[in-house]
Length: 183
Image 1 (cartoon, one colour):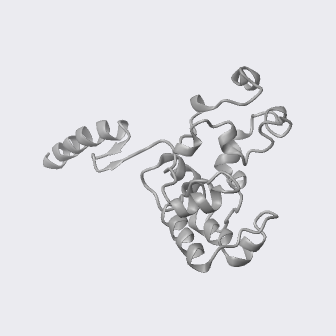
Image 2 (cartoon, helix red, strand yellow; image 1 turned 135 degrees about the vertical axis):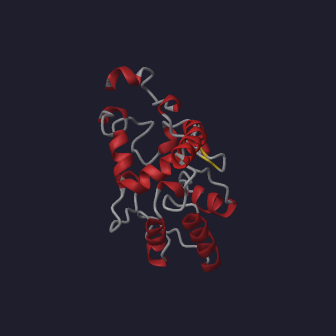
């Protein structure tokens, strides 16, 4: 009887907080990914491309991307940096990676979609990301001169810099009523 009562009390406390996106009021849950807060990273990487949030990849992927050899040929560009900066950026990326968070739901979904033995180096290779974009016609992305690739997240996701990737914040350039075209 006491166990049942305790279970009911625990459920009464847990269920409302879980539904509110919070776990016992201790760990707030957010729907997106944690925004970039590291100036060195945003200045270094954001100089050439959108500074992707660490929560979009697991730590093992960031480790591969930040190896000195990988930076020498970073998707066809030389992205070398001083060893001190490389280590500092890598520490930031792994600390806030998809497998390090319990507060950001999208990062958790990303982590769960990647098999443990895989370490994708492109965010567009992440199974969760691929699935979320699979119904978008080629003409809206690759053939769209204002987008060109799914790797340009911020071209359609208007709140991407804040870590928000919800559908209601999407605005595909040249396609005002894009939802009508993919339903």
